[in-house]
Image 1 (tube, one colour):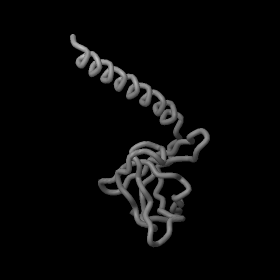
Image 2 (image 1 turned 90 degrees about the vertical axis):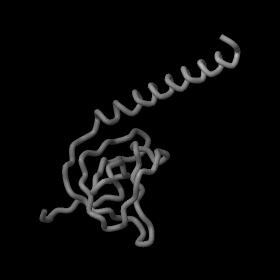
Image 3 (image 1 turned 180 degrees about the vertical axis):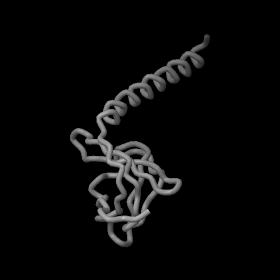
Image 4 (image 1 turned 30 degrees about the vertical axis):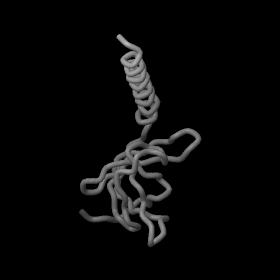
Length: 112
């Protein structure tokens, strides 16, 4: 094995370690979540703005979609992230991901 191949192997192994560690860091937070299973409306977002939907419950996570203000979404569950905010796993049509709970208002009376 030459030096170039050795560097590639070390980089790949480091990447695997980082990926595994990230998975373990997020997993306990998800396990600590509480079930909501309720309809909510996107709120506290300016009329000209939109609420970003994230892949994971963190503001720096990859954006996978967005909802307009007033959009009804199904809230599956929420979690409390230490030194952060509550995040909720929401779904609407083909978009499913995490949003900050402060931008959701539960809908009391709704019809399917």
